Length: 98
Image (cartoon, rainbow, N blue to C red; front, side):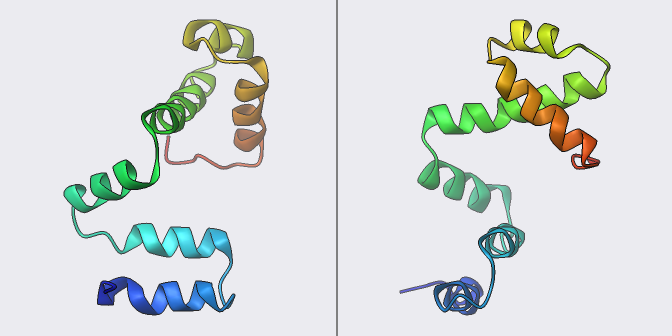
């Protein structure tokens, strides 16, 4: 049985009345506690995927501090392409919250 908080939203996505990104954003916004959010994160993502998501946020933080892409790549042991992706998103004025 589905949780009523999520049922209508899931139905909208199943019927393609909402984009994937909108669905995910609205889905996340429905969580009422850290415990619920953690349950979702552990259910949907592997340990490696959770670490990569956290690393991507750290990449953006370091880039916004003025560190070079090469320095960020070396210090976090990630590929330059991963760091470059973060830089491109910053150029699009995303990650304003970091």
